[in-house]
Amino acid sequence: MVIGSSSTSAETFAKALRRLCIVVIFAFAFAYIEAAVVVYLRAIFHADGFSFPLTSLAPGEPFRRLLLVEVGREAATLVLICTGAWLSGRNGAQRFAFFATIFAVWDIFYYVWLKILIDWPGSVMDWDLLFLIPVAWASPVLAPVIVSAILFGFAVVIIKCDASGRPVRVRVADWVGFSVAGLVVVCSFCMAGVHISEAAYREHFSWPLFFVGCVAAIALFVKCVLRSRAFRPGSAC
Image (cartoon, rainbow, N blue to C red; front, side, top):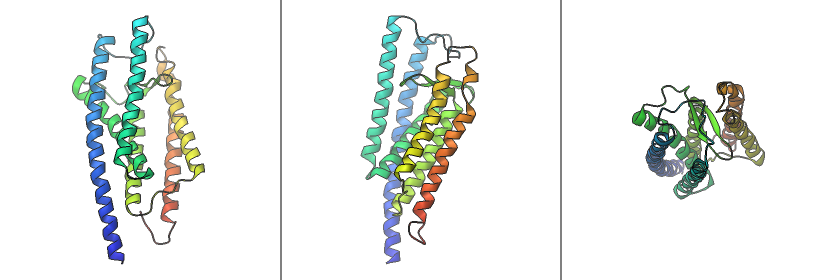
């Protein structure tokens, strides 16, 4: 009985791992598409080089129209990531894990592709304009890479635990905590984003605030995993 159960668990994990590999390939290719678009945008709007502070985010009606197009593209990107995760997963836990995987691999390899295509960023401390919804997000490149690495770690643990029959147990209070932690991280990006046209833009990204959000999310996740492991004595993820 135990042998059969272990075999089933191994087969389930193997299937989830195959889907994970497919999702990673999708995210890898999607990152290239994103990087290619940014190469074109920088050639149009930053022909003399992309650098902070950014002083060209407001002039003229044509630019405002293109800015709206860019906001729409970012929204469509999130829809694509959600759709890929939904189609890849077989339950809620897997779908969340695949969403985190796609987002993390896409985000990290976006910078890898940019480095290959245009030799940027020069270092992980170079600043980037991350997002425009609902306001501009900005930070050193290292910050979103850290978030993506955390999300990928979460995804691997979720997939492994789900395949072993011990899914990560997340309560309503935990979801509230994750939401607050996520908002703290987003706020650190947005606080910097509203100052990207100022000479002192670097002073407005709060590393302490950013790390508070990250550490809080990690602590909550570890608590959820430990709760899952303790749900039945002797079980393990």
